[in-house]
Length: 306
Image (tube, rainbow, N blue to C red; front, side):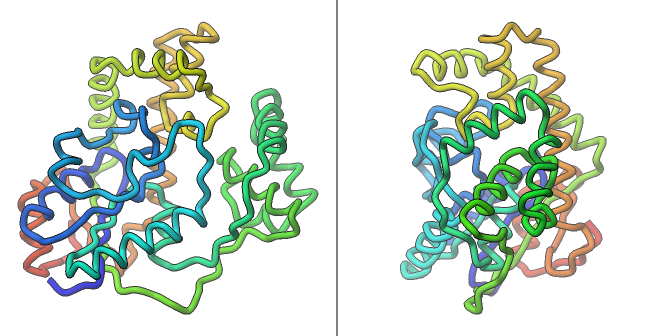
């Protein structure tokens, strides 16, 4: 296998973490996390974070480095991830990029020209209240009226993207996916499986998370003064469990909302990374073990027939 950096991408619960660890057993490498939910300390159960044992055994970058109330931008991620990648290569090791956060991963591997405008906390709070009261469509229509160019580019159903686009508009900036000239060579490996199989795996995963004291994890966050207005709570499940604990949302309804949001996330992830993209070597992780997939990657054998 000859490549500058290896990328493991795909929908949530497809086995990306397991594959990265299996590859790390055979390759002198370090892992760069590209999943935004894993940035935060104290959010572990609901994010599917690797165990402390795994994190201690295999070197990871950009994981467990933010407090739950810290702001962190796409531009900051892009800069720090590039530094991590270069440092890994200086040690003559292979960077393995892993994640399902489509925008962050794509911005990194395509080297987008990303704005470094700092978050406007006051504006975010105001627009967040508008979304909670009137829905995201209300704020998107406002964005479309005031900053139509930014509205064209972003996902109108994603509250964070809508707020950020409005924030940039107020600063006279456009949402940009422009690509800088500098580029790196990435071997992109995608994990997929039939949608219904994936949904069943997701449901089982959510069940195990609750059995692992996910509610207690959120209770502990609340007891430390953290709340659902924080970016960290946009990680699926934390917002819903907060509403269950604080606003008396029925637990069964919270669980159903978590399942629904996760399915929506899967659809968005497949929009970012297409199964017909010739640059991505796809494997069906419901048919093949991570050991088999790892061996094929090391041998450089890809037939793209899943």
